[in-house]
Amino acid sequence: MKTTRSLLCLAAALLLGSAPARAETLVLRADGYLDVVAGRIVRPATVVIEGETIAAVNPASPPAGATEIDLSGLVLAPGLIDVHTHLTYEISGDWRHRFVHETEADAALRGAKNARKTLLAGFTTVRELGAFAGGADVALMHAIERGDLIGPRIVPARQSISITGGHCDVTGFAPGILEGGPEDGTADGVDEVLKAVRYQIKYGAKVIKICATAGVLSFEGPVGAPQYSMAELRAAVEEAHRHGVKIAAHAHGTEGIKMAIRAGIDSVEHGSLLDDEAIELLLEHGTYLVTNIYPPGVFDYDSLPPQLRAKAEYVFPRREQSFRRAVEAGVKMAYGTDAGVYEHGLNAQQLAVRVGLGMTSADAIRSATLHAADLLGVDDRGRVAPGLLADLVAVAGDPLADVARFEDVRFVMKGGAIHRPVESR
Image 1 (cartoon, rainbow, N blue to C red):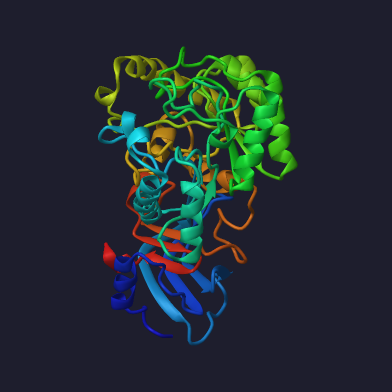
Image 2: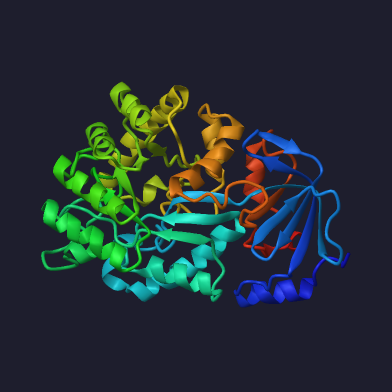
């Protein structure tokens, strides 16, 4: 076998920001790999990569002449999936007025920076739930697909859909400033909601996000108040599904959560204020819950205006309680961090938070692999298995014993291309 690929070539590719070239056949040799289905480490691990896919796992004899990658001391795992990110957004500087000072180009450039951080942190796929800037997330997806930029696979929502003055409408400015219509995601009534959904899909959305309730980081009324009628929610769901696209609902409040589930939504985002009936509905409909639980200390309450701080201090502790209850009930959960509300690249920190709130390590990892892939409707990732995409990470030690191992990934591969070589650590 050939020796490990040239570090100089890898370093040059990483510095230039483009995807490294793929060898025809690679053999990864590690101490083991994580079987997320069984929830166990299989030792040792020999994984054969051909092109963008996994060709074999622990074959009797690896192919002759392949390039071998030495990952001794490490455990391989599937690339992680975050189904709730905002790559083109971040709370930094004068973030409240950014919308009137910046353009879609600014958002796209910010997204390029954050996409790189996210991939190097071990997240090889993300669902971008609201770019806040037209089609910046769609443009970012295409640039990464072309190999112009380094970043995860992106499932973009484009503009979030909101009532006028609702959570996903830009508020707090004088009349006439940043007012939008269905093309911008601001839609009132069934006809406008249909147009908004169709417009986002026309221009590249691969998932629809609708804001079913009020939120935290917005200046409208009570944080959990429903904002769309049942007729409007059902129209959005039916139209998205008609196009073969899934739909996610931002929903903090109890009544809005129930309405979204009954309307046929595919995932409830945040799900902060669950009661027994809401949990029963999640179970009955098989709806995914994507709870974003921020690690202690990463969310800066002092950066918020008083009205928003009061909302955050009310909602976040109750969201943790709701998460515990959902775990105990066996609700289907996928992993979403809301990255952008806090620093990008720290996505893996929420794994340990989930474990601390009652989820097993295996289930926490499944939420960011198997279950996240299921929510996205893809079966080509989320496991280490032949025929799947070669989206892989490696960590030191046993991640089942300590999920925090994923906070320090030592190796990242996406589609057979190495983006973080182990020697770079």
